[in-house]
Each structure stands twice: as structure tokens, then as C-alpha cells.
Image (cartoon, rainbow, N blue to C red; front, side, top):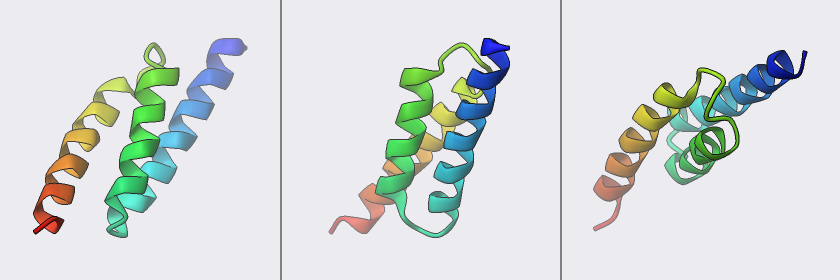
Length: 65
């Protein structure tokens, strides 16, 4: 049950990060994806979060003059 709870928490963090990403709030999204990687590296959302972290970093670079 603990593993299922951790998966649910990781998916929720990822979902919120994805919401921020879709709406152009890349710094907030990056923070959420970092939480997924740091807190839940073993529950299956790790690779997607890393991919979106890279995408957020690129988007933030483009926004910075």
C-alpha cells in the first residue's frame, strides 16, 4: 500500500507540473518535476519528469534575454 500511495503522490506532483508547463509557468513546473525526481525516484514517473525538466530549462532559457 505504501508503494501505491507513493505512486499516487508522484503522479499528482507530475500532473501539477504538467499543468504549469502547459500554461507557460516553466519555473513552477520545473520545481514540481524536481520534486518528483528527488522524492519519488523509484515509482515510475522519474524518466518523464527528467524529460520535462529539460524542456522547462530550454523554455526558461528562451524567455531570458
